[in-house]
Amino acid sequence: MGLFTKDIKTMDDLFLHTLQDIYYAENQILKNLPKMIEKVTNRELSGGLKNHLEETKKQVERLEQVFEKLGEKPKATDCPAMDGIIKEADEIAGNVADKEVLDAAIIAAAQAVEHYEITRYGTLIAWAEALGHDEVVRLLTTNLNEEKAADKKLTTVAERKGVNQKAAS
Image (cartoon, rainbow, N blue to C red; front, top):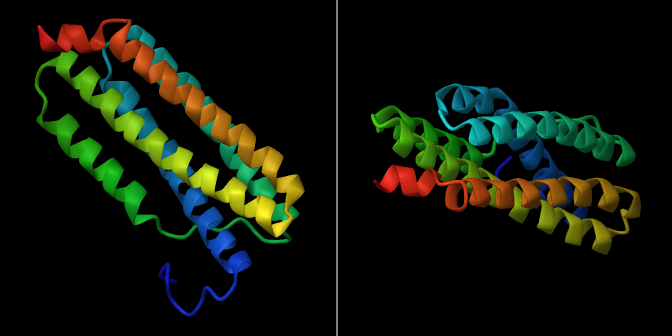
């Protein structure tokens, strides 16, 4: 089902499609984040990514609860945007020889992932409110808040914990 095909006739259809999109994205993150963690040399970055991996597992569980509240089975639909972000991260990581530069590149890739998730959750929350899916808003808001916090932590590690400075020197 393409985004603007005749399969999406109503706002509920669009909401469900976008929910399936973020479900796919979160599962791709679960699959690919351990590979990023293996490449990291900065301890704080590694610890932060490991914590976020655990959060992501809980986020997937919350999405499954959302599907349940909507009377749907959890189902993923391909997310070319997340596939592209992950592919780009893999390509860059494979081309960076300096470990400190690699840590900076991994932060940038992780923030690209976070920013995508933030946009998706923000949209889903607005749509859930408009559609009267009040029970779903809380679950999605929890995920959104975790994504925003993860993004802030990545910025802190990059800027205040010296990853960017080490990479630049």
